[in-house]
Length: 329
Image (cartoon, rainbow, N blue to C red; front, top):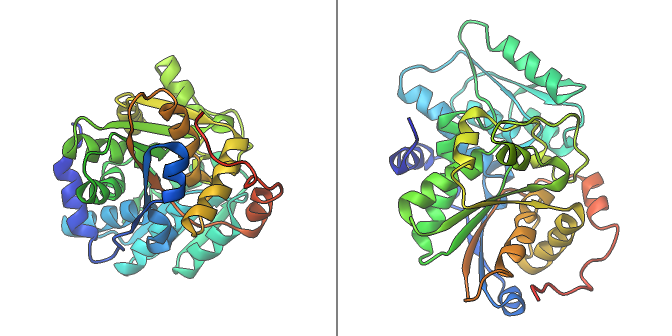
């Protein structure tokens, strides 16, 4: 059964005591340059520094609400979901073990440990996924996957839910897409609150399993670790639940690494806050979409997180892109 706005509303009630209601920012300069209004729901100011806190907290709170508090929680993630589940488990005094690939951001690995979770590293994402499946078979253990879970999706949808209650007459919403949890939740919340608003997903061209899946009509899996700075979108494949929602989107975009870096620099500069490359990525798609529009548009972009380690920061700023002013002409 498809999730509805009531599922997002229930998630919002569950997680309210534990999360930040994040700000919506805009840049007058950017709006003047582009000729449209862009609003940024800044989940980089969320607990653990990313929207993932919402899905992790909702799933654990939902289990407790049902009287099914687990003895142990496990999760698999390359980053922000790991922190989210560790943080959520800590709020409810549940031991947690998080399985992560070795190439995960060191900042995210350290943060996951700091929330009290045991971290198990492995060479590849495939091995990580195998280990978590085995761990989940133990009695009393509950596995919270990073995106392919209805309560995770419902929690992620609360970001757009908050934003669309504050902002009116939004023409389109754009989200970064890894496994599709944020994009799916955003679609459900947006269609429930503002049915005429379009919803778009965006992923790196170098990790475009979702776009390939949509083109071919079946879930496609990446053949190896993708070469992208968007570590939050390095998922090997979308899930069967999220794929069902991705097929309902108004469109889907792929963004090059050059555009991804360009917009990470510019949004960091214009919004005066720290952003991950993953969450700056949708601006490339927004500009592409705006070039096709004949009237002034009001666009909401979900800024997914702000956890950036030093090696990634160095790569982002290797070249100066701030000499090229944003334009859609």
